[in-house]
Amino acid sequence: MLLSVIIPCYNSSQYLPGAVDSVLDNFDGQVEILVVDDGSTDDIEPVLADLKQRYSQVSIVRQSNQGVAVARNNGAKASKGDFLLFLDADDVICAGGLAAAVDIIESDRAAHDLYIGRYSIEYEDGTVKCMPATLGNNQGVRNYLAGRLSVQQGAYLIRRDAYLQAPFPEGLSTQEDIPFFLSCLARLQCLVMEVEMVRYHKYRGAVSKAKDKALQEGFANMDVLFAPPYHCQQLERYRVSIYRTKVRGLLRIAAKQGRSADTLSVWKGYLQRSGVPAWFDLRVHFKALKACLGAARR
Image 1 (cartoon, helix red, strand yellow):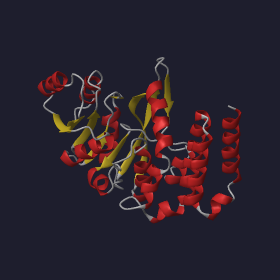
Image 2 (cartoon, helix red, strand yellow):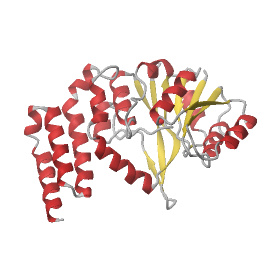
Image 3 (tube, helix red, strand yellow):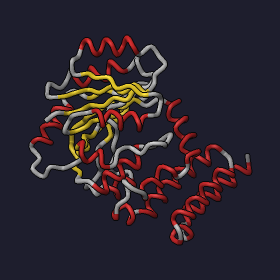
Image 4 (cartoon, rainbow, N blue to C red):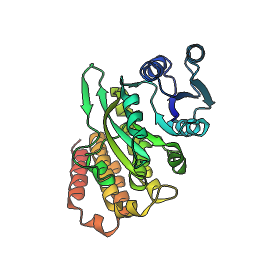
């Protein structure tokens, strides 16, 4: 089978060669790598030229700066592989990860659509935390919402045809991967693999910036789940749980920001989306009240 590895890149030219090398140094199967330059303004041209010269498997897709979701989707459209793997430019594939995953796919008689592997997180101080793909059995949406099923870019392979039916939602500034994963888990046949796939790098500044954007965007990334092409009956059964998980995260951010207006906006958005069950969600009401009182004391 042909595997397409799609690497969106925006001003990450210093990391990009490491990501590409990590794929081709450890995998000798059929693979193509599509680097999607998302309108980078750094010195990326000589880096791209060098990669093209060193590796015949590398192709370049160019676009104006439109964000990572558009970059992934454009890379997928340009790809030719049976399966897709999305790798961030500052992460690296673990030795042996791709080969092991491909072996599982090729020997899988059930022909699943989504194969989820494990990943590890490397922090700025050099410490590494290994993340299991799942804790307990794989119940898809339920486990993902409960934090028992963890998915990361670079640690899953998805059948190209299945991906193109409902690709990454565009127009979101952050957390576009969450509705994508939830939709996949609800709609597709999924298999969890005990294979370490990727080393994910976490930077403090990027995390805090993402939290600010998440608060500004509110419930937008969950709202897309209840419209085509992502919506399905299983997601509808989890509507309240999905919004309850989201509101708890937004309230934590709002409490740290210390602005009561943000807290009230989040609380109101939750009530509007979840209907009658939300009015009896005493835990959320308590968190909202606590955040407002904290803001008042400041």
